[in-house]
Image (cartoon, rainbow, N blue to C red):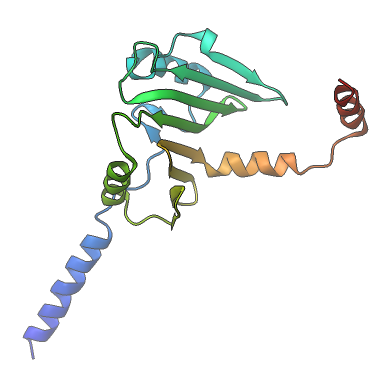
Amino acid sequence: MKKQPLFLFSALFFLSFSLNAFSPLPYGYKELQLGLSLNDTKLELLKDPDFGYHGDRDVSLIPGGNQVLIETDAEYGHGSVFFTQCYFQFYNDKLYTIILNINPNKMDYYSMLQTLSKKYGEPNSLDPKKTVWKNEEVTMILEKPLSVKYIDNIISKEISNYNTIEKSGEEKVRQMFLDDF
């Protein structure tokens, strides 16, 4: 009878260990983490040649306000053989989306899926086009043909809430003017 509680305790211990054996979802890749400021992101990109970042010529403003995009071209620059283009999107000076396009000639979707599943556990959703891991703060998406996306869920929700606000009369008139072209 005493062996049964010891066996039960051992089984529960190993079960709880195996359930917690996965790493928490990452907030980005290497030193490029969601929430970084635009300037801090530029500094990190300059430190890491894998991305093929060439400085401010890779930075552009996105129409509509407080958004900035950094687009790097590692494939034709002096970056990693594994990346093609990478995108870093900011809202109110905070990095909220990272998109890393991976060279399908150097890496395959299945290897990435297998590696990410071993490290972060079973995905929240899986379909023929993408695999998604998600928690309250971050979403990580492996997408075909081959890209990895990191999204700050809090900022993304804030942006989507902002976009559903009714446009003012001035904004509507401005849009009507633009539509005439």
